[in-house]
Amino acid sequence: MASEEGFQNQQYGTSQQGQSGALSVSAAMSLAKQSLESLTVRMVGEVSEVSIKAGYKAAYFTVKDSSASLPCMMWNNRYRASGIQLAVGQLVELTGRFTLYAAKGRMNFDVFTVALAGEGDLRLKVANIARKLKAEGLTDPARKRALPVFPERIGLVTSPRSAAVHDVLRTLRRRFPVATVLLAGVPVEGVNAPAGIIEGLRCVVSSGAQVVLVVRGGGSFEDMMPFNDEMLARAIAACPVPVVTGIGHEVDTAIADMVSDFRASTPTAAAEAVSPARENLDALMSARARSLSTNVSLSIERARSQVQRVSERPIFEDPMLLFAADAQYIDATAERLARAVPARLERQGKEIEVISGRLQRLGGSLTERFNYQMRASAARLDDLSPVNTIARGYSIARDGQGGILKSVSQAPIGSQVSVTLIDGNLTCDVVGISPFSENGEE
Image 1 (cartoon, rainbow, N blue to C red):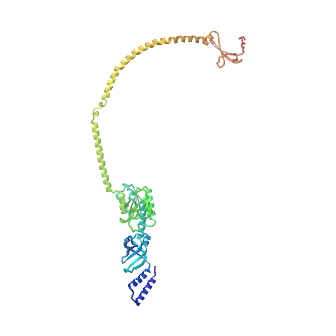
Image 2 (image 1 turned 135 degrees about the horizontal axis):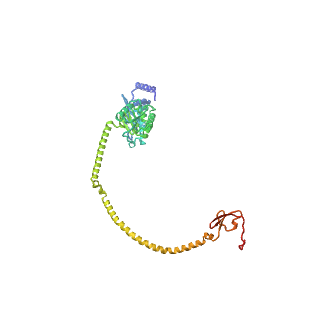
Image 3 (image 1 turned 60 degrees about the horizontal axis):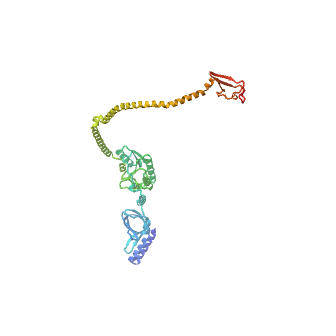
């Protein structure tokens, strides 16, 4: 920035020239241009006009305050490097120098740098965040969820000392008193507010909230900045239950409003959005009651008509009609059976007598041969019977285990043997042995 001393020197030189002779217009404009361009000035003003057209080498705009206005120009390379889209109404801070366009005798302000001033800078940051989130699809209406019709647990995230909390609670108490309100008291202004609101969201959701209200009352743009925080916007978009925002007044719109599932104009409107009005509930219940009564009456009437039609059937007038045909069939069958069984038994009895006689005749001829064989076998068995042998004077000797003795070697001296005779047994001790010789002699 040029010093005031240089400007004073230029003024002194001009006055000296004025005493020696008059200057031409060109010389005077040149002198003024040199004097003005030696100063670098920083100023703040509101943009009142903007002219930026394709083919222009510079951006032209006008800034003003309550008492004056100043035309400005900024070369395109500087304008593009600033990253700012100038618009009427913006408050901007400019750095540059005054310059004269001698051919027309017009003064412009040659802008070196431009930046949004005060709220304007904040709005630029907010706009950049909004564009970023929009590009990611977080503000897409298609991703917004429907609000529950009758939420039993409503989360409320706001300042516990604000008027907004009382407005919301009063509205919910009046419209939907059966709902349970889960209040997370958090700061809604200051640098720590976004983190507090995010934690409040987490707490009410973990406590079972089916929908969450994020609200605050009105304020300046700077006061609303916590609700333009990018991390808060992402937390609202990622919330597992629908989020309703009611921030400021109807004209205020924050980034939190853009990513929420429903944007209400005020905290009271947010409470109304998640709660059915009592009069609407009464009307709904009355309509449902009438519909239910009508449907029940129609169902009863249809059932009555059906029962009436069934009751008029002949079967219910005379129940025996249901079994008449079967009963007659049973009677006819029983009659046939009564006639058929005796006749059948009589025929079978005669057949049995004939067969019995034949069996008796055949049986006698079949058993005669076996009777002869049996008598021969019985005689043979009688001949071979040990009893008959004993009866003829023989005896049978057995050892102590009951085995028949066939040799004297089976009964050593001192052993005991049993001898069977025709009329009994003898128990004998062996005291001597006399074996036969090969010719049968002792």
